[in-house]
Image (cartoon, rainbow, N blue to C red; front, side, top):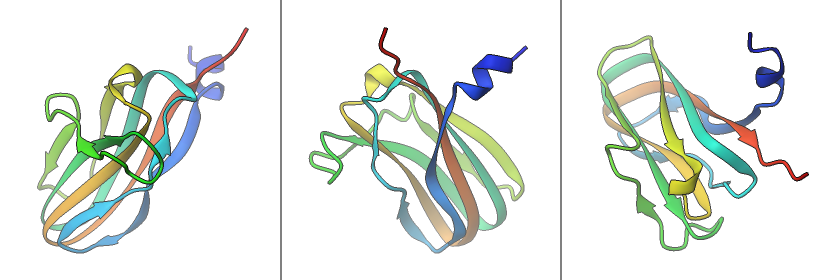
Length: 124
């Protein structure tokens, strides 16, 4: 049963629900040091023309200094079907300091949204 696990999970907006045009559409930089374990980026795609690739980038601060794409093997999903949901899962230890979701749309538009679900770091 997920009783205590679900209430212990932090939920952070990773990509605001919107209609996205062709090109890279960046979510906000999210500070990762406050989390532990896996970072789960749950996404949903509504109407879609063309395709969308969800990927993750990390950086050394909230301004995006030294931004770099994470390995596609760790964090990438390519979608061509409307009405699709899924998740990118990345171990927190793979993130330098900050992370963001990028939705790269070909053709467009694409209705999409995503949230980050993770366990907050606790101190004993």
